Image (cartoon, rainbow, N blue to C red; front, top):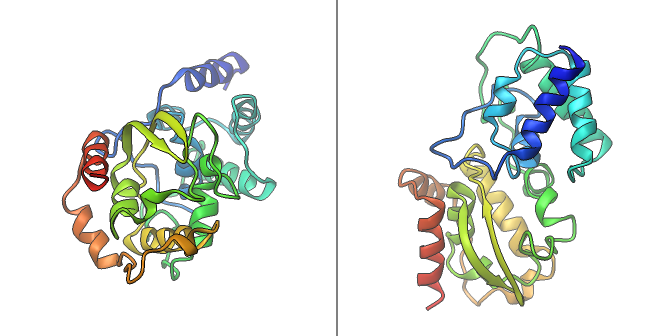
Length: 238
């Protein structure tokens, strides 16, 4: 790819709006690192722009990742290496044949680890300490929305959320994309992790039940729009 083409692609990505909804989003190829691309890229970019650039060489993807640092991409060296390997392998000039199993990781799916799911898909916006980004992304620490209903955070993860909200004294009006590429087990695991971390355990109402993978599967079968989720949240807060 010519340098001008690479920079044209980067500029297009930088100007994209929030990621498309679950119904509109195009699926990335299965492979190790897919969750990281969703978790760190789809919040700011329409992933169709990534798919449209399939076929560029590893060096071009490397340049894209370097450029994205200027637009706020914050990932560890290990995460960067994994993302680059994914992009260069599955969206490079010679991708492997389609196939393989498991919710984006390839092969067999290991038992869901809430900490890893958080690090792969949540940490870019909500931060390692769960404090979010003031004015942009809500905190998880001290967020009463976590306990509005056993399934509420899972509904947000499955469908996204769009509309103005007030959380912990902050007024926010942003778009969270759907993370429905995560499995039911992964969503249950990360919701449980968030509810027991960042000091949230002490805010848990007595007798409050954890959401189960089966309940998430039932919710997945009844998709909502991000605006619907905003209305659901409002109904729970009455």
